[in-house]
Image 1 (cartoon, rainbow, N blue to C red):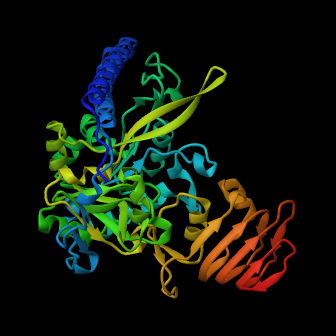
Image 2: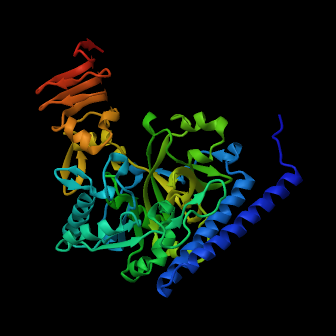
Length: 494
C-alpha cells in the first residue's frame, strides 16, 4: 500500500495556520517584553524570548511537516561510530588540566516527595548527590594536583536553594560555579499562546526547557568564555542524580586523541531500559533516536533489546570551542520534545505545552562525534525510591564520594520494584529504617503496607505482596531466599 500523501490544499491550509500561530506568538512575546521595566533585565529577557520564538516557530513548522523519522533509513552505527570502552587504554592524568565538569541541576525532588533541588536529597551516609559530586572532584584535584572546576546548571526552580547550599563548600579544594538555564513561557495547548501575561507572572506559567538548553545558556551566561580563558577544552556533562558518572581518564584521553568534538556514553540495554534513546546511523549521519521519534507501528521494535542493544546514559563529553562555534552560527537544531502538562487557571484545569530539547540530540552537529559503550557501573541514576534502596545498600561501598560495587557481588545490580507505599522518601525511610542486605539478591518486588525490620537479608528472588487493609512486618534478622510472602506471612517456595 502506498502511504497517504497530503494534498496541495492541505499543505496550504497548514502553512497558513503555521504563519498565523507564529505571528500571534511574536505579538504576545513582544507584549511580555514590554512588561519589563529594568533595562538590563529586559535585554536578557528579550534574548530569551527570541530563542523561545525560534523554538516555537520550528515546532509549528515541524508539526505541519510530521515529526517521525523514516524507519527504512535507519541503520546500525558503524564500528567507528560506537566503540567499546575496553578498547580505550590510555589512563594518563595529564589532560585533567583541560577538563571541567558540569552537573545538570535544574530538577526538583517532587517525584520522590521532596521539596527543593533533587541534588540535596540524602543518598548515602548522610550525604546528598551534590555532596558526593563535590567529594569526587575534590579528591581528583588533591590526588593529581589539578584544578577541575564543577559547574552547576540550575533552573529558576533550584537556583536560590542551590546558592545557599554551595556556600558550605567554600573551604574545599574545588571551584564551584553556577549559572541558570533559560526560563520559557508555557503555552496553552488549544490557542498556542503563552500562559504568562507579564514578566512577573507566577512560576507555574514558566518552565525550564530541558537540558538541550545547556549550549545556549552556557554561552549567554559567560561561563563558556570563562572556561576557555582558564585553558579548559572539554566539558564532562551528566545528570545530577547519576551516581555512576565520575571523571574517567580513559574517555578523556580517547576524546583528545581522536579529535572528537562529542562523545556519548552508552551502556547495554536491559528490559528496564527499553524506552532509552539509542545511537543510529540515519542517512549516513550519526544521531540519537528517541522513542518519541519512532513511528507507532515500530515502537515495539525500538524497545527490543536485540535490535537496539545499548542506550544513552546522558554522560556526555563535549568540546568547548565546538559549542561556542555552533551556538554563534545558530546551527544547533535539536529535535523538539512537546511535554504536556496541566495547570490551574482560576477554578479550572488547563492543558499546556512545554517545548523542550535534549542535550544528547545535538550529537549530529559535532565533528567526529561517536558513542563509547561503557560498563553499567557508570549508569547509576536515582529516579525513584527503588533506586535509592539500591544505592544505600551493602551492594556498594563509598570511596571518595564514588559508589563502588562490592567485589563479592556476582553480576550486575539486582532488579528492585517498590510499590506506591514507598514512592515518597519520607515513606521509604519510615518503612525501611534499616537497609537490608542484598548482596545475593536477583529480584525484589514489594507492594502494599510492608515494614522492614533490622538486619534483614534478601537472596535470589523475593516477592512480598500485602493485601489491601493488611500489614506485613518483616521481622528483625529475617533471611528471605527465593520466597513469596503474602498478607498472612505464608512463605511459599518460589
